[in-house]
Image 1 (cartoon, rainbow, N blue to C red):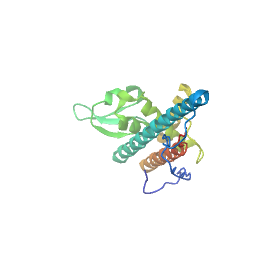
Image 2 (cartoon, rainbow, N blue to C red):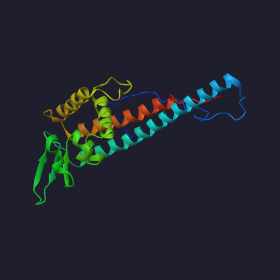
Image 3 (spheres, one colour):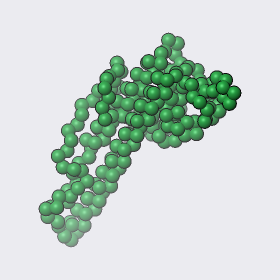
Image 4 (cartoon, rainbow, N blue to C red):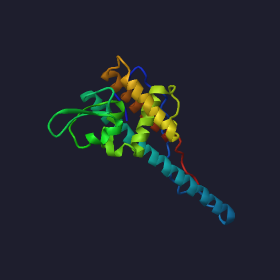
Length: 211
């Protein structure tokens, strides 16, 4: 995954080399031990394979999150607002705005604009998925892009009160006087790059399984 340009608050990390041996495989010519040592070897291989499956699943998730953030950036580029999550058209074609508390009112309505958080929610499927893990982890990436030091690994699954505080941080940043839609789109692009670099970090943890 590559992006064609950088933004001022990019998170830069060095790409890790690709292993020459495909992780999760056992060389066919590896001598196998018997008895207790052989059993311990087999258990070690199983644990290593299970760890590799978890890393692969995390890589797939990061790929999905990067695409979600790309979609959120597209939402902002089409229309961005402050002090509400969504601007939409009601059944009479009138422009309405919905805060986080009334976000479900915008479900299924033509979307006109969204704030930073609302754009992530919209790209994930709309207000009914606001509490999904995908939305929460995408917002973790956006907050990391905004507040964390460059190159620092993403800290996943913060406590609920911490996560709520981070959403407030993002909302406050979005609503700050003088903020522009270009800055919001730029932050989402940085979050996409954070997802890419995090995937590189996870991929580097994959090692060949020998037994």
